[in-house]
Image 1 (cartoon, rainbow, N blue to C red):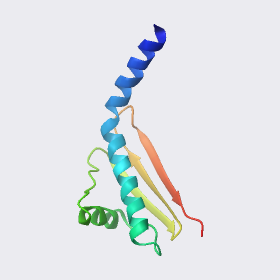
Image 2 (image 1 turned 180 degrees about the vertical axis):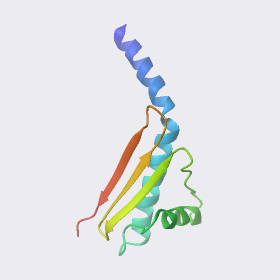
Image 3 (image 1 turned 90 degrees about the vertical axis):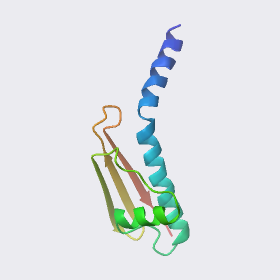
Length: 101
């Protein structure tokens, strides 16, 4: 009985964060698609460039859920995207990318 209650609580908590998770998954998909389209540069230089790329592919990125989104590209082979939110279940998340050639 306790495990059933825990599953219900976890399910309720995960459904609250599903919009933020969906937005992060869309950003990740856009980064992967960018890398496939531009294998020499691999990662976008700016968040604006990534948003324009996604919009051109008819998969716009909705980042309005987040209070702050930062894209940092250290080199042509590494990049990180940081998401900050006021939601208690989704306060902070980082996507880090690195390519080895």
